[in-house]
Length: 308
Image (cartoon, rainbow, N blue to C red; front, top):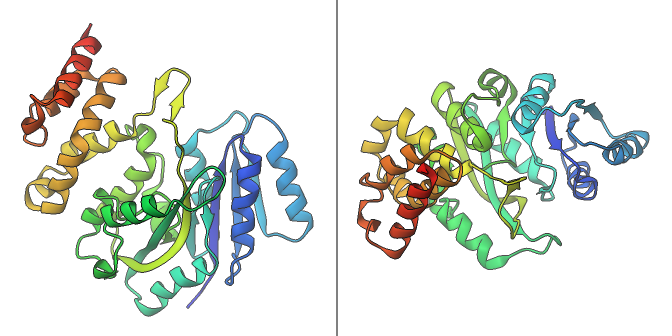
């Protein structure tokens, strides 16, 4: 089996984190065929980091995007430029654990009909220390546990309930290119939209291996863009309720996900200027039991404020 792995790293104005990310790739037991870096930075600091590693022989393809592409277009550009047989996406503040590429590619070697493979994530803080309780809780909540190891019975369920992670996975390059990463209407939920589209449109199984393969850096603050609140929860909820209504009705895992995500999706709808969507979800079966709760009242007032 071919083992040419292209690791794609989109980055923007985080040279210190980026270098740690890059080193985690270069230190793999299975060396990458190539590392593609898409740089949206407004300065040359990341360029200098890349140049230093290229001089040491690192197999880096570097693209400094001027003007910047934004996350979705940046990732899509890297996917399309990749020449390997497999693609791994790694955001510029996350890390691959030692042996990750070897662990992930073994899933394809053993199961020829697998289209994407992923494992557990450790959650780390800004300083790189593992948050043990958070790590355990997130992997449990996203069904990344021993009893779920192996081929997934439903790729779409895996994508919707976020068992399929936002990065640190391995996917067949032809499938990633065909699906693309820049989906209209996805907003900040471009990672989520990619997983869902990959599940919906490609042949082959998702495979979960019950091993830690990456570290996800968890920010203690909300993601903001100036005064605009990130709309990830809103966009993900909208994708599922509007595009996959049949799956919602038949899958208890997806129903549970919708019940758990409804409150934050409603609040994000209010904060991002989509109160009509928020009101529709507010009275839906996924939120109805919470309408008269203190949180439900807060969400109702936020929706009213957004209308004015």
